[in-house]
Length: 195
Image 1 (cartoon, rainbow, N blue to C red):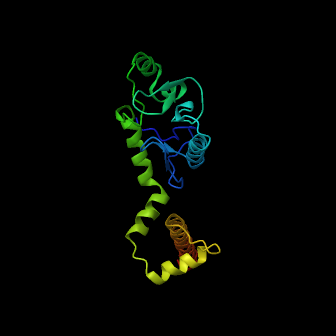
Image 2 (cartoon, rainbow, N blue to C red):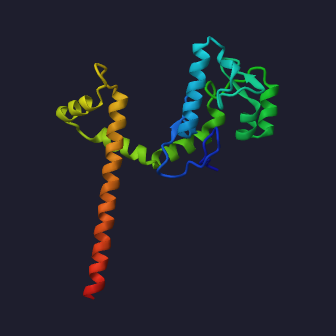
Image 3 (cartoon, rainbow, N blue to C red):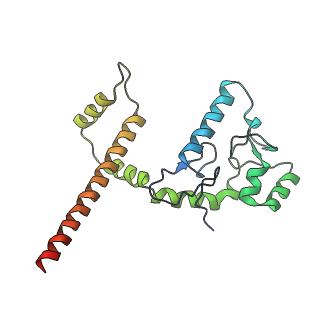
């Protein structure tokens, strides 16, 4: 069964308007935008404060009863393992002295990764990003965007430019859809009076 929820907070992500995020630590695992930010910030705080990364769960970025990976510096909490794989999987992992986390061994999360791929391909953001990557933007347009985003002497990053282009694309498509709906409504009203 394909999961369509955030792997951290369990919010339903199966909606085309959600900006599905990839888990900051575990490849191709779906999270909602707030959870991806929380996990990223928790990791950065650990690094900034020179704390070991295995003090927090790699999946939820909280504490709890942690199982340490035998090959890297990360850990995963028992609650996350139970919620995603069941109590039987947790029992097996606890018996394994050479357990590898989900970054080091992606085999247990392949189905979840398939869910992420499916959700990501349906999102509006993904559609807009694909369209923008295929679009040839002129140097003049790019320079215009850079100047609009410029903050004093600081040049905008490529990520900032891309985000603005994605927002602009989505706004244009929503505007087109609204105009199409207005024309359809107008034709329907005219049709009522003519026939």
